[in-house]
Structure formats: structure tokens, C-alpha cells
Length: 286
Image 1: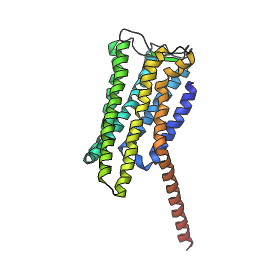
Image 2 (image 1 turned 90 degrees about the vertical axis):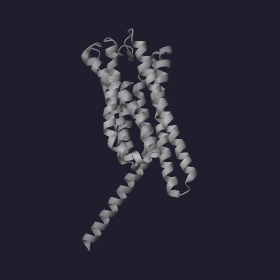
Image 3 (image 1 turned 135 degrees about the vertical axis):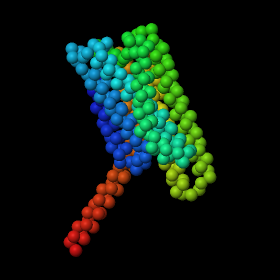
Image 4 (image 1 turned 180 degrees about the horizontal axis):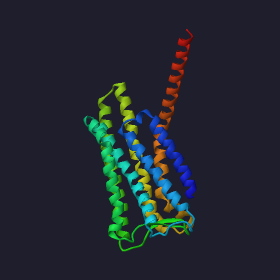
């Protein structure tokens, strides 16, 4: 299952990166955020797949510095990718509701990404601050991901996993609702075809941002509520890896909304190059 997840997930993420590069609608800061999300998802896929596929005799012990560092990287990658969902919503909110702030947001995007990385790193390291014995482990006998059981485990899961993700989802839904309402308001005021075309494109990006709530919501429900009640060993394997599998969902959403435009843009560029080459050849012959 881990190998299949890595192959399928990395294929989707790499295709999504190509799509982001080629799609004309992803050439602003929104595209930068999408790129960082896919790079982070690829990091999570690689780290978790490599670690889980190591033979038991080669794998470091669960409480070793190497193992804890690997799981730290995985945890940071997961939550950093999730933070991109919030930045998607903020990006759309600023670009559509407060367009006068577009340039300021564009200039600040890199700094915001760094700040988010620092916050997420602290969010993960705080596990050790609470309890040095609190960290993620991979059970190679049962093929399950889980946290060590300490006095702080329940507290960390409740406040830094479930509530943290719930706040992220609430922020996304709130911002996107305001943004979408603003689009509908502007649409009712504008009857110019060009304006309507722009509004349709903006509405698609807001809808994409809404859809990005699906992976985080899926993890919250399945990992923290359904998995503990599951008795089937096979389902437990799938459910315990859902935080990794959702990378595929992130990439799929990008492909769903932007792959057709990326293909169309690529075809247009190829036709333009072919036309230019033909004209150059004719000029040379003349």
C-alpha cells in the first residue's frame, strides 16, 4: 500500500507541478502557493514512503534521533501543506475583494511562506516540549502510523491536530464565503462580457479553494474519529495513512481545475512556435 501510494501520489503531484507551470491562470502568487504545496506533498510522500518501506532490520528504533527527525519532517510537511489551503483563501480574498493590495501581497508571498514554515515547525516541536516521549511512530508489524501514548498525547491531538485543523477549515470557509458573495454582488452590477468572464475565472479559483477543505476535513474525520473505532486490520492500514493519501487529493483538485487550460496553453504555444518556424523558413527561402 505504501509503494502504491508513493507511485500514484508522486505521479499526480508531478503532473500538478507541470500543470501549474503551464496554466495561464496560475502565474500569479496563487500559482506560487500551489507550487509550494505540491513540493511539500512530494516531500511528505518521499519521507513517509522511504521510512515505512525500510526493512525492520535496517530501520532505526522508534525513539532514536533519526526516526524522530524523520517523523518531524513528515508532520511539518503535512501541516505546511495544510497551511497552503488557508493561504489560497487569503490570496483569493485579497485579489478579489481588495485588489489594491495585490502588489503588496505579491511582494510579501515569500516572507509569508517563511513565517508559516516557522510556525508549523514550532507547532510540531512543541510535542517534545510537552513530553520528550511524545512523537509519531510507524508500527512495522501492523503497518500503522500513530503517536506514542503519553500523558500529553490526548491533549496534543485534541488541540494541535483536531482543533488546529478545524480553525484552518473555519478560516477557509469564512474567507471564501465572503469572497464568493462579493463575486456574486459584482456580477449583479456588471453586465460587460469581459467583466463576466473575469468573474467566472475568479469564481473557479474560489471554488477550488473551497474544495481544498476536503483533504483536511477527510483526515480529521477518518484519522481521529473513524480509525480508533475500526477493527478491520486492512482498513486500519488505509485509515492510518490517510494523512499521506490526501496529498493525492490536493494534486487531483489542481488537475481538475487547471489541467485542461494547461493543455490548451501548451497546444497554443506549440502552434505558435510551428507557425513562427514556418514563416522563418519561407523568409529564408525567399
